[in-house]
Image 1 (cartoon, helix red, strand yellow):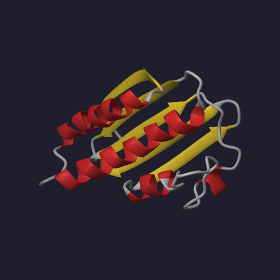
Image 2 (image 1 turned 90 degrees about the horizontal axis):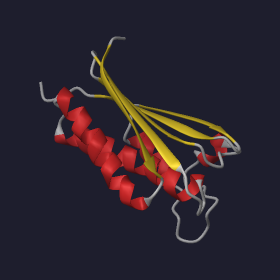
Image 3 (image 1 turned 90 degrees about the vertical axis):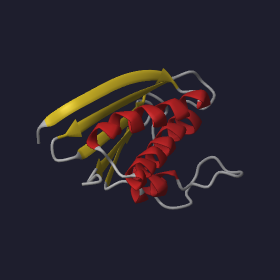
Image 4 (image 1 turned 135 degrees about the vertical axis):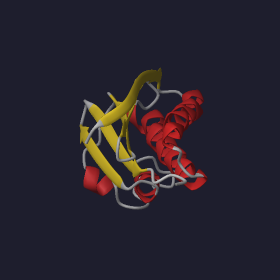
Length: 143
């Protein structure tokens, strides 16, 4: 499929950058004239993916979030959120609702939320190397 636009950025994995990532992706997606519901879905999924990097990937160490977006002629938006953190030993288990390695008041719903607000969710991870989350959303728009 033909790509019509893309962007990439790198940020520190800090909570102050979660809102920035959400806003940047929403602003980028705006060129496809999405509905308010589509923008809300995109922002929610991106928030969850970025928050996972901040909370889980680096565990109190400094690290980076690598965010990229691609928009395709058919209206498909592909968002990649990558870290170079600790990785996930069992991706299948981590994607189960309510599963968490953090304990306490963590919900363990991050991947479930991402999946419910995306058309497609792909998670790739290697222990000690990091995790890549790819979210895809078809923007049907207002037309």
